[in-house]
Length: 165
Image 1 (cartoon, rainbow, N blue to C red):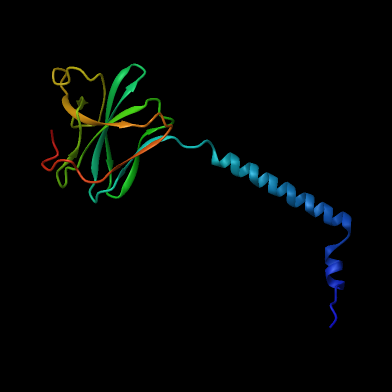
Image 2: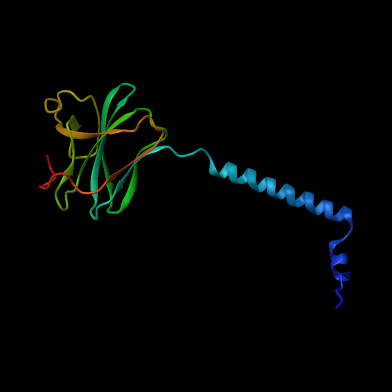
């Protein structure tokens, strides 16, 4: 049995050509690595909510901002979908959430009362909600343990009913 190495030897070229190819391949690999690092950007850090029900839910959040307590709403998150409530690194340990399923009835709430309204809102302060023309709504607390990002998963409402306070 004989093996013809002639074509391999010719295609491989001289040692200088091989070194040049190795350098070009290494340079291309290094450039690809740098490009991927630049495209990846910083790690995302958000407060997200995943709706594990089959219905669209409306979500409001509350949190301590630099200028005091703030509540915001509404985010509509479809069934079996996730949505971002706050973008960027989380600045607080505790966040508060209220959600309602107005299609099937039911809500996710708690004992931390904040101000809301039926239309989209951003409200500063949690005191005297009704006197200021808002609704007083019970939110449940999320302890993020001071993580930079957090995802809340909602499964079934805690109460059945109209979902309206």
